[in-house]
Length: 401
Ligand code: ASP
Ligand code: MG
Image (cartoon, rainbow, N blue to C red; front, side, top):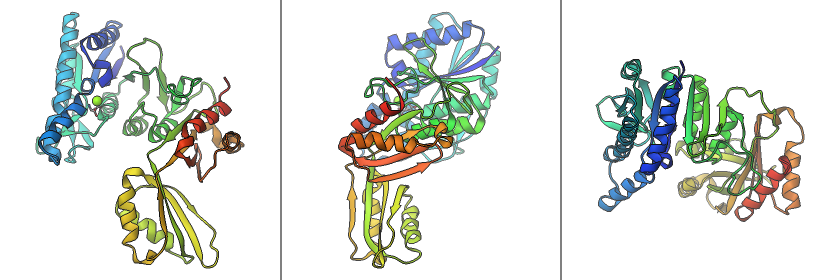
């Protein structure tokens, strides 16, 4: 008998009909002889609606009270799903985060799981119950309710799978799996059968909205096999695991990220320690820097450019302005940029991937502002208006029609 953890996101349980559909999937899995633990998010836009309700009352509510409010969404969805399963005649119990033994730190609204006390979960499974657990929420050492941050239900499901040594963690969503690019924008985007944790992490970080990246980190750390699949169509999805043997593909995916700002500091003094001082100051403000480009020094000066997440732009500019060493220097920021990336473990051992990508961009007359590479990723920074055509062109270069 296998133990399967199934996670259903908000859209999969958005209304009564969808809740009943999920109850069907869960009970079919149970009927096939498996133990099943189900982790559910709040229905549809419930979490956003609750945030809106809070805003109408207080523009800066404390994170503790926000957690108290937002955790209510999952309490609704677990009980409704349990009722739908009762109605089908199966034994079921729903549990809030604390009842399921989730201890977190006290970082309200972005709490980290510290420990999962599985005794209650195990007791319910021994009684042959289907166990429905609220996603997203936990309890800190002061017995206050915490939440794991938006999308935290994926992480919750993987944590349960890891602590119960489940055979598989299935993440149900409204797409059929992980694709080589956004299927809504790239007509011949293909569904992948398998993908490695590292590739998935790159895709998740680069904005492919299928899995939350903390959940992928956790799956990798505890070696939990994850399957991403559709709750609406019963077809096999994409399996995320350590090594894939099927399809030794060069490139797994092409993505874009438009949440980027480029900052350039012109004519900084060409002396040792400048990069350390600039990036040290940004790091001290918790600003995460991505692509960095420094020109070769000329006439005792050099230019330094780098990219950051768009919402760090103001803080970064202020930090640079406050730095006396840069007094009087020209600092330019540009948010009309996009990062387009190809990801794939195969490129590590395969020459020519970068050239193929650059050729596709050249043929569309798209100018590259910055380039960065790692063993499994090549990213270019381009003009934002070119982002969609760049993704299509690069995708076409790696994946034949
Ligand atoms: N309901 C929460 C949210 O929308 C958690 C989740 O969906 O994973 O962020
Ligand atoms: Mg949600």
